[in-house]
Each structure stands twice: as C-alpha cells, then as structure tokens.
Image (cartoon, each protein chain N blue to C red):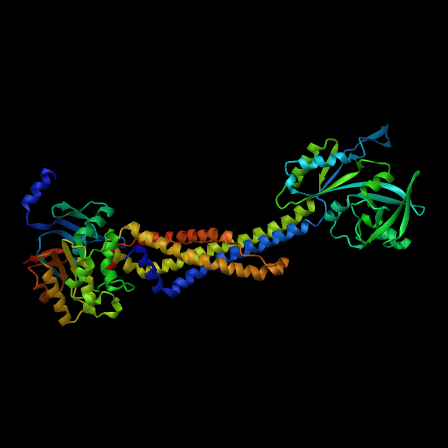
Length: 391
Length: 233
C-alpha cells in the first residue's frame, strides 16, 4: 500500500464532500475555458471580418504645403513635391520587414476626363488587387480583366451609369485634352454610398494613357493582414523603402473595435478569476471541514508514525487530485458551454482548444494545492495526545 | 556511547524505561494544571506493567509521555538508556516508529481501509516494505483469514485484535495499551488480555486501566492518585 492510495480510499469514502469540492473547481475551470474559447473564436472572426474592411494603410506622395501670407492676408498655399508615385517603385513595398503580412497592394490613378460632355472622375486600378481589396463590390456585369482586350473596358459607378442608362456592353467615349478612347462598359457597381458611385473605373494602363500619366500612380491602398501586426510600424517601414511618400495607417476603427473585444474579454476573464478564487475557497473549506472530521484519524496516524511531511503531502495530494479531476471535467464543460455561447456572439462554433487543456488542469491542480495550505496548517497543529485523550 | 551513558546503562541494566521526576502541566484557560507531580518509576525489559488509577489521575498522560506522543514539562524519561526528553518532533516520530506500538480503547482503526491496510500503515509511514510482517502480525492475533475485511465488517474484539496487530507490526520494544478492553464485553476482554499477556516477554507491555481485575494479569501494578505514584506493587 502507498500513502496516496490511502488518500484515494479516503476520498471515495467521502463521496459527497468530494463531489462538492470537485464541482467548485469544475465551475471555475469551465468558466475560464468557456471565456478563452469563446473569445478566441470571436477574435478570429473579428479579424476575419476586419480583413474585409479594405485598406488599412494608404500610401500617397508626400506633398508639403507652404502657406503664402502677405501681411495679414492669406494668399493660398504653395505646394511642393511630386503628385505621383512611380509605378516601378510599387515592388519596393514587398521588401519591408513585415512583408509576410501584406495581403493587397492596390495602385490607384485619379484624374478628370469628359464623358458625354460632362467631367467625371476616372480611377485607374489593378483589377486583381482591387478585387481583393473591395470584395463587397457588387458588379452588375463582369469584373475588369488584366488581359488586354480589343476594346478597353470600364466599370461605372451607379451615379454615372443610372442617369445615362448605361449597362454591361454599352459603349462610352472618354476624352481628355486631345486624347479620346472608346470604352465598353464591363459592369456597373451597385451603389456603395462611397466615392466610387461617381467614378469611371479603368484598368491602370488605360487610365495612364487617357490621363497622360504613363508609369505613374496617385496612391496605393495597402491591406495588411493584421491579427497581430502593428499597422503603424508597417507604415513606417513603407516610408523607409519609398522615400518621398507618406504612408498613413487607417487602424483607428480596428483598434477601437479590438479595444471593445479586449475589454469584454478582460471583464469575462476577471469574472472567471473571481470564480477560481471562490472555487479555491470552496475546496479549502471542504478540506477544512474534512480535517475537522478527520482530526481523530490524523491523530492516530501521527501516533502510529506519520511524520508532518507525510500528513501535509497527503493533504496536498488530495487537493491536487480534486484540482486535476475538476480541471479535466471543467475543460469539457467549458468547451461545451462555448459551443452554446460562441454562436450567439459571433455566429461561429469554436473547435475545442486542446492546447489549453494542460494549462487549465495545471492551474486547477495549483488551486487545489493552494486550498490545502490552511487545512495542512490545521492538521500540523493537531496534537495526537490531545486528540486521543478526547475520544 | 559516552562514559556517562555507560554508567547509566550499568546502573539500570534491567530498566527498559526510566521515568525520573517527571511533571506535566497543561494550560487551562488563564492558568495551568499540574497533572503529574514528580513521577519516578522504571519498567524492566519484557515486563507487563499496569498503570492504574481513577479518571483524571494522570495515567493516560503518563502513557503518552512514555510513548513519546507528548513531552514532560519537567524531569526526564529514558528508553533503553536513551534520553527522549528535549528531542525534536522529527526525532520523536522516528523513535516512536521503532520503539512504541499503541492500542486504544476505541481501537481507532481507519474505517476506509481493510484490516491488512490498517496493519500495514505503520510500515507505510516508516517507508518500509511489507515482507510478510503484516501477515505475521495478523497471524499472531489469529485474524489471518480476515485480512481483507473492513473494520465495519468486524466485531469489537476482532477490531481490537487488528489494532494489536497494527501495534506490533513494526516489532516495537514497548506496547502501550490504553484501556484495551474498555469497549469490549467480559469474554472478549479476557481474550484480549490473554493475547496481551502472550506478547509480554517478547516486548514490554504497559497497560493503562482502572480495572483491578485486569491489572491483576500484569507482573506489576503502578497506582496513580492525583498525579502522584500512590503505590507500586
């Protein structure tokens, strides 16, 4: 027989008390697992959603404006710097340190052209990159192709297409100064409520020809997959590889929403930790009550040769065992709870987080042992002579 | 061994236990109660001694002091010429494991354990393996066939015999029995007494009782009254 088998037998003798103590740990462990699992899937879902938000870094030529002041009168500003970025420089962005996080680098060229006697904003794009950047655009017709087509194609914003009655296949003529091109409408973008509702969108090369800006782009919209990457730092890295440009992080909304998720998670975790503390007290009080019941037995054990270390080790083993069983069951209960809670929060069912099973059981074992401290102190104070005299 | 110890050993060659001027005080509220007042006694090796006295006379206290469960307030106790007073708790536990076995009036078996496991407990605490010691002890008390029964499945007499097996499993030099028949009927009590008597000689037996008839089974009777040795027969 081993000392620990004695503890096991003793625990099974006191099944009800054992269940109460284990239940306390189960509740705490389940709360922690449910919070971690639910908020983990919520965070993933949130990041997935934010990856569809569009660009989170906008790269523009750095233009300095110098105010022109004559005495007390302002006479406008003098702008210094280049208005365009060289298209050949775009590849340099992929040399930044965090290039693995770069998902989309979409060049844009803006300019004004004439359509049916009216001025319209022309936006040149890289069709493939733009499609990745704006997955929510609903196009009636088809998307622009990268391949050279016999007749150039364009996408129209709804504010242009609808009044002019233009649909997929319609032919339009765009002109600027002495350049004129005939373009076939590939599709009409359903209203997004954003600027593109009033744009004529052309492939980059076509727009560069029309606007006489070959090899130039006005800006770059960059989408970084930022579950963990620092967008501000990436902006600085881009400025480092592209001198004369300004890279501005658009992370405020994302950060605010992440702050809400973090705050909610912290609150839930705080509740879990309080539950863990309560469970520690439950285990401690259950064990303390059992010490009171077992005073006679502890006295006998000391009389027949149990040392202080053996008595304490039995109590710690009991606490650790309660913690381990409670933590193990709590993991599954918590996972089950997250299967119910997570779909309500983010419409997704999480996978069990097996990687937290051991840490959770470890924390519960530690909690059980912590709860054994007071009973152990009490047990060490038992005077066998006194106990045996009183029974 | 020092010369001084040799001299003590020679002077009291036959004394297994020597109690010298032992007093024991207990705190009671704001004051102190002196339970034993300068007790002097000695017990020879293999002797069967009964300590008699009324309730509160200090007999159990004296037994606990000899069994190293408690320490005297004053005076000294030596076992086999080795002073046990003033030793650390750890030393006392180690000495107790090898030297003393206890039998209690209420048997004090662990209810969740079988007879075998109860008897094996002192070996477990001493970190020793059971190499037939438990079976031998159970055989000695005539309960070899009841090894795997729990205390609740045994009669009072059987439980006390299991307790005796537990007390002798480590082959202690001293067997300390506190009212061993107090919870048993007369017939069963007589059987237990006869068992204890058979153990005397093999080991020193000190029995605490207030029953004169039982005490008469022993080689010698030490009677306590109000914490003093009244008579030693």
